[in-house]
Image (cartoon, rainbow, N blue to C red; front, side, top):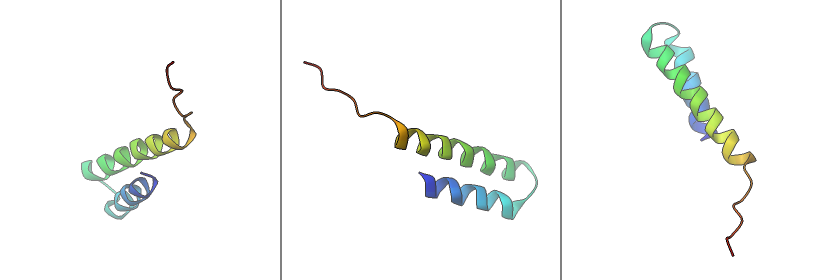
Length: 48
């Protein structure tokens, strides 16, 4: 997910303006947040 975030932000930087660049930046931010959340979350405890 972090690699996808980096790719989306890089593509947004290449486009650099317009609605498509904003969409790429938004997807990059969302993928970055999801990747960081996945790395920092606690493992679920099994119910007994």
